[in-house]
Length: 397
Image (cartoon, rainbow, N blue to C red):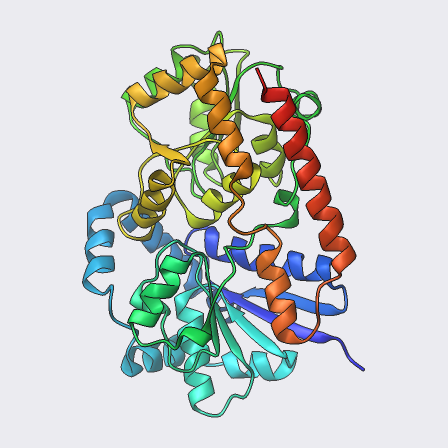
């Protein structure tokens, strides 16, 4: 009997959508190796010439006209993609989508971006029988995610479920799973050992992530960050923005033994474990990964729309703050003096497991009729609990 097959479709608008697809695929394969998973950025796969041009235009718009992006998000917030738009998308970019599905013969399709979800929903309306799950990768739900043909929605919180049911989606079609993170984020590792492995000094460390495109913040915040670099180690991770990495490395301001500047890396999980504070844009995936690691977060430059909602969610829970020079100075003082308020912040984050990191993958397997390996889940949970206990003991005054 052939293995079950899960096909995950995404698009490269930012790194979070595809990151969520790969995270879920790896989680599924780890919990049940008898299930095969494949991740495809559908537009790029079908149109390798046109898709990069579209993504580049989107990136420039986000960088240069964020208010326009926010206005478009808000004006269309309650609206699904209409049939004419779905037809246009299919005719222009996704003509061969049905052939891909026919060739790969999946038992389940999961979409982590609204556009492939809309395309697959149109194919289902025209006779495709494969179940469609839509995985919403933020802490909000724009109307473009909603399609009548979706068999199930996998969402981050009960609030997002309420938004969908308020738009007419039956409650039984929505499952609160949390946003999936890669198995590398399911457990935490020893901070001192990782610093040694990564070639970092064993001192208060701040990880500054520029997002998948390497976006940055203003000079006032940068001045606050670098003003205490003799006492606090700064690790700048600028994603795929190679030009910015080169520019920063050539800047005398950053030529300091306590500053590390890197581009794209597959070791964000290790860098989070080695750090005491994370400064980042509030993308859905990064927020969730940071929460899985229990690291305090400061958010900057939220793209108007879904990132604003992500920021609001974590700030309201007391798990993050909005970045400004005063906030930087406050947290740097906490890191240097290790006072009781910082210890309490860490304990609360370690205790805040609204959804275990493996929950989304385990839920998909259960719905697929291929339950997860319980021994694997128990061993992961035990390791996580042991690390939480060790952290609590270490942080006790």
